[in-house]
Length: 238
Length: 279
Image (tube, rainbow over all chains, first blue to last red; front, side, top):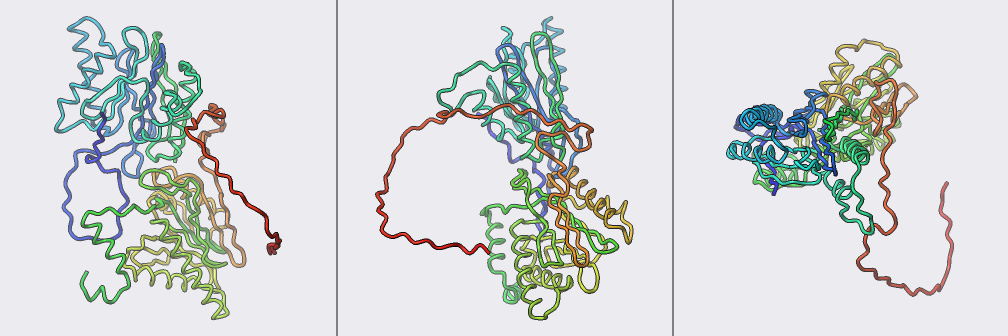
């Protein structure tokens, strides 16, 4: 269901050393700013975590640019990809949330926000928002919910999902530890909040070792019925 | 590329590869080192420095690779660019230089290594992606060269190369002085590489130094472990290691689908013992 938009954006390659002749350069409206996001849904909680590094090519723009944005008291969204589109998209979502609240006299639920985001993204099907979104929050019954998207609006509800530059490194580990995939004879215990937070920290520390775009610090947002708690953990800065 | 040029230089394979790539066929990407390397001349000799990260695209392939290569007992060379190219080029020149040294009955000179490297790189017209910082102390004193993939060289008191060269050069341009002491020079190189490690995404992990003076070489690997896994950055006061969770699997977690044991029926016919020469 997810299709990568590799054609957009160029992750700053090192210059090749041979001159191949005159080349026409086309202005690219996209740029890749790196970053990894991760969301996990528990029995009565949801965790949305992201690193705080903003990069471009081989440089770092900022070491303190978190990718989690609070939408409501029960929903947090993580956006990574092209930072310009992340900012615009979150502004648009905030505006739409306000409009809904004023028309319907209630806050949007996580499921409703997910469905709305899908239509917003598909509205730009032919000039997409270069953003990988993951929504984490509590559904109407108070259970944890995670919704993952691709850049043009295809989405589904998951138990856990990783997105962004190190997603390919994190997802298999989550499949094993949370989904109990490829393991036999293991008890399928429900994930506790402490174990989930510990797992998220360990998994980001490992991602920072091998992915150059992930590092600096990790911001964890824990969504429970009592509100949203934030935690920051330092990561490798190289 | 005209026909006459092809006749004059020995690089058919390199040219073929370039042509094929232009047609759209993807040859597997060689591993590049990303890299920050630098060198500085001080009062009694010189200091070479390098980071230790090797990247494949934007993924770290090796967290602790060695980028300061041996050329001769008094000459070392840092390499940036394609990892295989820097490794093989320095090994070839090291070998040729040893034979040359035996033939002339003299300690090799840095200018000789420089000549050999630049002539080889020029012969390959830049297809060998090796950007080198060559340094050593010989009978004429300490010498430092930077060598570019197409074969040009510069002889300077301080040089930087690699994707983190701008970050390292910024530190050098701020604090370089002529005739520094050894400790000052080591601190300067360490800080220049650290600037590359923290500000350039292609460089990272540890700092290796190589101090070369007349009659002594200190190969400090690692000189500084600037980034340990799970530990906070070196600039913070308390370095509390993170308590990782336990991810050990119990025996039998990996399911065994089929198992077949093939016994090899062997009969001892003769037994001899030969000791290995470990001298």
